[in-house]
Image (cartoon, rainbow, N blue to C red):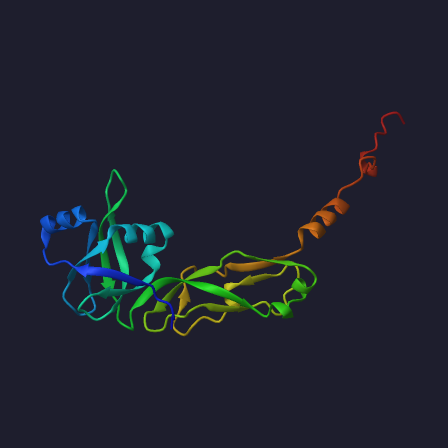
Length: 216
């Protein structure tokens, strides 16, 4: 299960309706609501600046949060919608859903490369390029992995590492159904350019098939 679930600090909003929401915005908060999980909906306020910072980092809708509200037990939530001002494009309201341990959610899980010392291609100077350092998975909320482990043992220059070569946690599956590339092992730039130069004909070389025989 994930060891680092980011905290999200919020305040319980006592009032409801448009009036209370407008008041929250004037005081530097973004109103929101937390629902699901077999409990009544809870109105909350989120600090505007902190929320905006998290939104700018990206993948806010695919991040699991530990919601902390004073006087209440922490609860895991995932955002299910962000309403924005049509002119300023700033957040005006946020919806969160409580998660049970059996809930299925989409999350981006980082990929950790191991066995670099066992890759012949790397020992020859090859370069490992990460095409997808993170993979979006459908996972169970109660069994979220910290990372996916991908071995490059035996990889040669020109080989690729695909998602099918990575063991996914039980019950998890990739959102993309095809066997997509995670990383590739390519030749070092110097060797690649040298090979390209060797393949090009010299300026004074003319293929036999192109010799002009019109004077014969």
